[in-house]
View 1 (cartoon, rainbow, N blue to C red):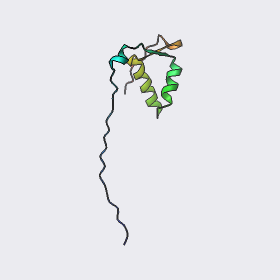
View 2 (cartoon, rainbow, N blue to C red):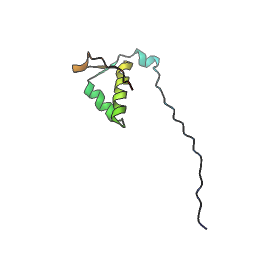
View 3 (cartoon, helix red, strand yellow):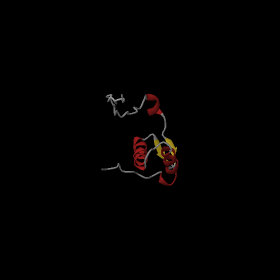
Length: 81
């Protein structure tokens, strides 16, 4: 007798987690990196170019990282759809 397959319902939780600033992180000075250093570091853990760009913009706009080098005075606009 052939085995029949069964459907098993699986719940999926597409929650996006946000990292909140704590008193220790808000009191520390921003990290100074060149744009290349930041892109290379984020690129190591990004799955796509879009994720890389969005993450770099978020990090810069959040203020935890300040750019050093040629782009230290640059301002970056948020991405729009």
